[in-house]
Length: 179
Length: 188
Image (cartoon, rainbow over all chains, first blue to last red; front, side, top):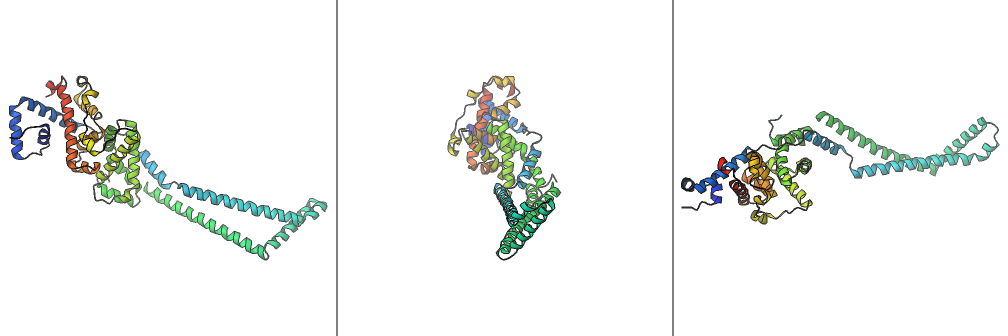
């Protein structure tokens, strides 16, 4: 005869006992009122737990989460963001340097003639002459190789941005088809 | 679309159909929420952690090999996230053995006469939140999510016998509490 402990009652409830043990528990339940009371209470808890309904999350939960997933997927990574900002800053600075260099070269090549000229038309024609002289100077000898290097650099950087843009628009397009 | 298996949905998401992930979310959100709510004892925290769990699962979908059921894999993320949240809240999270051996006294937290003021169903719901976190997780997984003892042991990374011990202990504790109430004679 087995001793009917709480553990045995739980196993009986879950149907984990052997046939012989089950019979012994059944007989014990018939003879002991105390045991019967314990088992009934255990069964009540078991049944009430099974009847429990699940809790519900807020109605907008799925939509909010899906938006987060999409936003995260297409967000620019922090490292990439820093890279883009540094490249853009570099290009801006380069443009400013080139612009400044051209202006200063123009002015230095025709300073005396601007002061001596009598009309606005003369000044403009003098400045144009200065620009032509500067360009001639730039596109000859070592100046030409510097210009070439700058243009090559600009083409490489533009190529990178073009490639990134293409990749992004392709991803956005496929996302639009799926969502 | 709703009758697709978890694996079929995951394959579809992996192929680039992100929107199919919403089927997985709708399938598991309430079950996982019920478990988290009882473990964390706080509705707001439960929903916040649940969001993180779905995001973690989405980001790790490529790591899901399909050796275990998706539900088991997902509930493991939910369970571990709940434990992390609890430990971050500096709550007491004990190791496996002490957790199995832990004693809890529902009577010290509840007045047995409260049962008379409430519906027994509501009372049982309420009393689960008074159980220690691991016990309430087991009760929710076993009864609400209808998971087997083996699945629960996989989720919690403890032995099957330990799951049974904790399940029985929780049930006994709730039973004893009901037996001590005045309403016991009417109910039983």
